Amino acid sequence: FEVNEAAEIIQSAADRNSNIIFGAVINEDLEDEVRVTVIATGFDGGGPPPPPVPRFDVEQRDRDRDRSQPRAPRREEPSRGRGPIFDQSESSSLEIGDDDIDVPPFLKDT
Image (tube, rainbow, N blue to C red; front, side, top):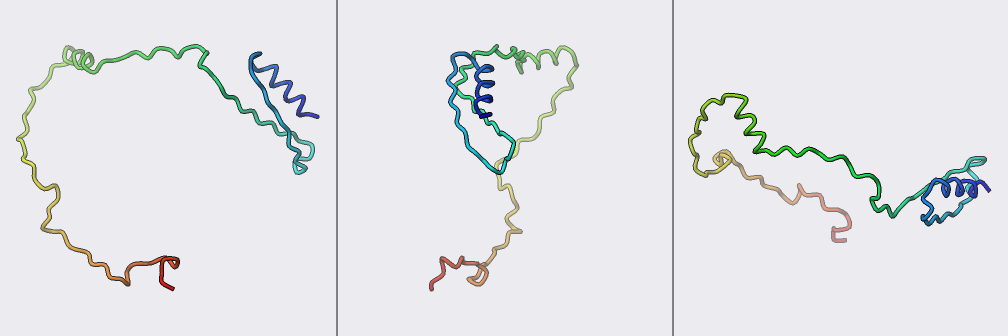
């Protein structure tokens, strides 16, 4: 009746308002061992809040960097018109014949 002992240990460690439901399965393969699985649900986040994370604004970082380091003048890049991304002159068409396609047996006509 080790399951009762395990349930008592869990009950003593849990909150006094918790609802504990337990069951037992006899597994002859375990011989003298007892395996206990605990599933806990219903946490409402009543624990301590996480420590605040300092917020570092991107604009503030840029201002701080501007004050600490001299900046080189920016070089403007020439604007590019929208054109094809790939050179289409080298493209080739791929022809696939019926012999190149594997049809699963359950789709074949019988």
